[in-house]
Image (cartoon, rainbow, N blue to C red; front, side, top):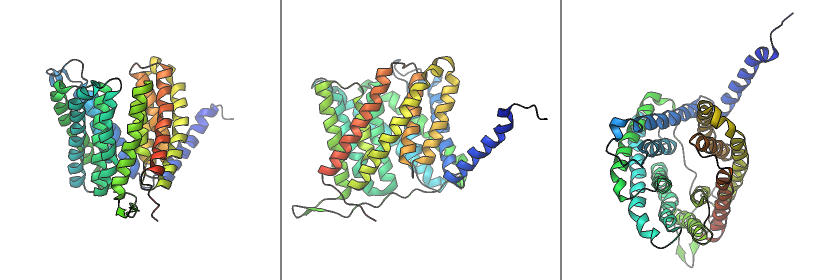
Length: 361
């Protein structure tokens, strides 16, 4: 008679089921490798940025580690080349783009803040336009546009000013090291990513409008509406509404509607699960960070084909990492959820009204 507990007997079966699911979702382990690279780049940048000898000349109010980690993480997400040399080149370019975005916000935000409440959000409109418009230059262009906006977003969240230029430059150097080293070690096992085809140039009033220009206007229009709403009603997390609006805009109005639907599904699942794990953030922060790392690996695996799962995984990772960093206000964390839904809805409206693009098969 076997006296072993059932959980010990069934553990190999559970492990086998998990591995089988991973093989179905990611045959060849290509995306898992990329997910591990994202986590490694983020952790390496955060660790280097936390060294006192590295950041001793940086103002006390600026976290170089967090800034560099954001640059390296999202550069690794946007990079999509197969050869190591091309990947390393693109990672360096993408980190520079993020630093330029942060510098642009640090320089322009003080001018817009003089316009009144919520003025700084208007700077994000320029980054929103770049996310859509630069897709005309392929994978690298799309990544550069995304990094310009990410740099602005991080600078917005950290309230960077012109005096923080040295911190941005230092974060740039750290992020390049943190992003390139894991890519060099991952080898040629990763596959390139192909962007969806852009729509043909639609004619409006006898004038051809570039699809990339239309996408840029759609993203910028939604971001501008969010900035105006924030100036009027003082939204708690307006930047997340802008972000949702920017990244749901696809190469067609139908594609945008599909991305909005999937983002809503993912957010409605990921945020409640993250909120349910808030007690762990106080009593087991190491476990929370491990769960967040696992969620980012799932994010990398699901992003090309299952945008809903990717959004859910990222929403979960965002909530638990904020909680582990000391943010425990449930209304504030929940605001990131409903304002994300608001931004998605505005992105859908923009895609339907501002130079709508038809689907290309």
